[in-house]
Amino acid sequence: MTPEAEQSQSEPPAEEGAAALSADDAPPTGDEASAGGDSAEDSTSEDSVGEGAREEQVRPEERLERAVRAAEQALIEYEIAVETFRIEVENFSRLHHQRLGPMYARLDELEAQIAEARAARTGDPEDMRKAQEARARVMPMPGVEELFHDWLDSDGLSPEASAMLTEQPVRPPQRVRPSDEARKLYRELVRKAHPDLAQDDAERRRRDEFIARVNAAYARGDEALLQELSEEWAAGPVAKEWRPSRAEELYVRLEWLAERKELLSLVARDLEESAIGAMLKLAPDDPDRLLEEIAEQLLTQVSEREAELAGLLG
Image 1 (cartoon, rainbow, N blue to C red):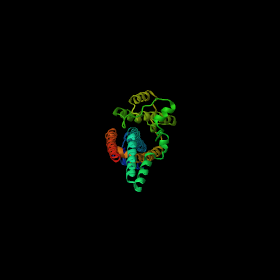
Image 2 (image 1 turned 135 degrees about the horizontal axis):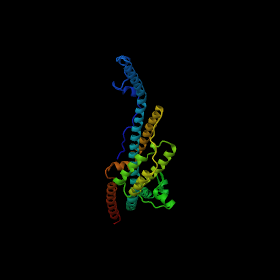
Image 3 (image 1 turned 120 degrees about the vertical axis):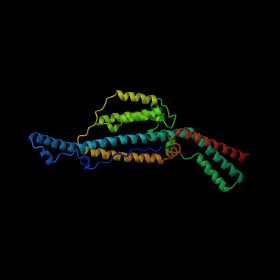
Image 4 (image 1 turned 90 degrees about the vertical axis):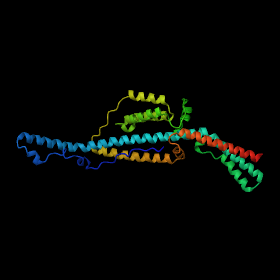
């Protein structure tokens, strides 16, 4: 499942506001202002000129503000897509290791035993070399993750490790993809509480901390906790809507949003090109079923290797 997002709106050209004005919106010309002849009409025409000029000054900033709002929403939607995919990748990786790791280990052991049995039968130096290589693959040099017994994930300590160290209960993910209701609650919460909607540093910190809790609950597929968080957010303080005062701030905001989108694109690409991401592409609609299919294939391979080993030893 490849996260796709709407393109963030690019920085509007400086002449956009003026070019967007229609003929009806344009301020009246001098000839039109003097066509009536009497003083009342002159006064009305002067008011129209002043109002048109003010509108021409305000509209570019309003257009910029709308562009920023649209870019913010597009970025939030893209972040949701990237984060949900990241969680699926991590859940798939964890469940893949938990459920299929013993089968892979059994296959490696059978391969080593088959190679050793063949070498013992033939006495061929090449077969003996292959047997040594096969045995070495069964007990490879452990990596950092193995030394820490899978206590590490992309965010540092895994939930299981954190729970053990803090003596807090934790429920590991049961499925690669959380339920539809959990996904719905998660998306609603991110749209409402996203840190990019904060208007000051204190509000951003509050939102950052809250979204971290939302992400953790979603990673475990915890619907009940997501519902509690939804109620907590609804009862919390409501931040005032952000209203930029100068067009320059809006341009800077648009540039930041574009840079953020580029960074997220790199994250999305790395996820898609990872080994687990590539596996998820094989079953974008039902990644949990993919684990079952791989397990079935591994069981078949184990049976075949066991039969081959029995033939060599018999």
